[in-house]
Length: 82
Image 1 (cartoon, helix red, strand yellow):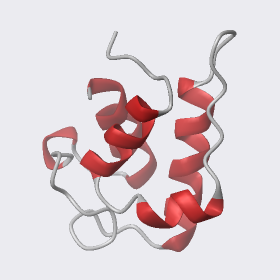
Image 2 (image 1 turned 30 degrees about the vertical axis):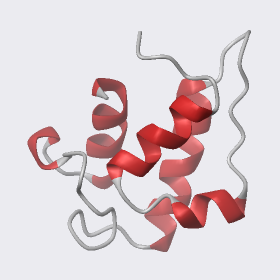
Image 3 (image 1 turned 90 degrees about the horizontal axis):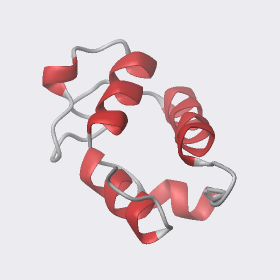
Image 4 (image 1 turned 135 degrees about the vertical axis):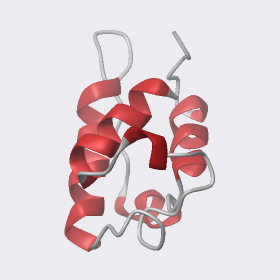
């Protein structure tokens, strides 16, 4: 959660305290479609390593509308909490 918060806060230029699980990227954090693309790319880069490669399809990205959905997606695709 902390890493996701840091990425979202950085990419959307918001305070980390605003990045809560239920926050909608577009409605609560004022992201536009370009911001969302950059956010998805940042998640892919941050959470891919030698053992795990995260690739988020455009179709999957459309369903990632809140901070919690991003966390759930990453967990479901091999990202651990450590």
